[in-house]
Length: 461
Image 1 (cartoon, rainbow, N blue to C red):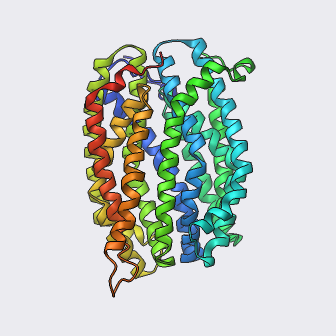
Image 2 (tube, rainbow, N blue to C red):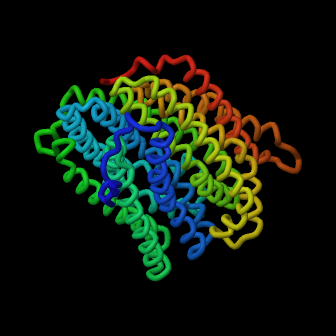
Image 3 (cartoon, rainbow, N blue to C red):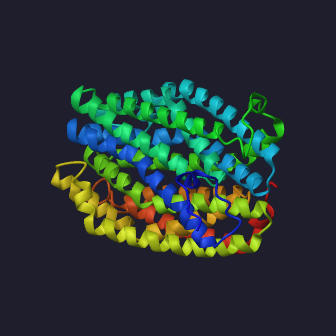
């Protein structure tokens, strides 16, 4: 009888053979665990500053979040493009092109990191003021952002090269490295904030140091995979063919994330107008929301790799079968997780603050969003299939319609419609109602466009 070795779990997975849903779930689980670990970065930051510094420090870290996400769109675009290219070349067994594509990813990551390290600190302050960030927290927010941007290269390399590993079907290695970084981040958070009383800057410093470790481990792993591709100096020179393909595939995803981040920033300005207490409540909800959304993002990324490899191998029937089965499993997973959050939500929110009114407010906002999480599974899974096929433009347009054309006017309009003598600024809960509507409409639009099938002719290979 053949037994699996531990090393077998760290090998690339060929998703062009075997039971589709089993392959998708097996690939998703370590990636879901990795995403949970990544979410712990920001969550632990919030818990530590909320407990050891105060609610204003919690609001400061949260206010900086949308700006950090906006600056990360370069990495997101490159990462998505890398995953699609790598998965299709791997599925088609094209070693030379696979090697050159990976080398191109490494170089473009360096360029993107240097850009953010220069531009990020310069625009942090003006963006915070543009968002009507309260004076009581703006200094902390600016310091937090500046430190993160100056140390962005670690997170950039981990995210993009982790995307390369996932494109090769290896979601385990990326998980292990992220778990190591997460544990290190938690330890450093406690040391810098609780022991050395460094406050918000200590949280940012812990994050960049931990991300740098995960980046080094990821680079080391890729350099050892000589049986699959060649990691040589000459492949680091960005060639026009691969740079163009990477940008063509990744740019729409980067633009999608940029649009999403910009819409959050615009709505953040509305959120900030309700004061520090509502800002802190929003931070708590978004931290927990980040965990509830993880199955959607994890299954969506798994679908991208699955579709890319099978399209590279010319197995379209297998793609559509996996899309149907994977989406149903994702929806069931989200339903269970959402139910648990509703049952134990107040206990989770109590981790961030001791203020009872803040816990109650946060829980009420979370209840509004609950029904939308299953809809998000449909959007992410089917968008993942389209991206894996090489159609990254369609999900971009869906995001523009839902996140900008619909979400922003809805948020401001619903708040305005609820203004009264008791609530002269309107009902802040409408901000979350607009997000729920956005998610549901996004799922409906994505399903209709997926069923039209135009994405099937967009393969790179």
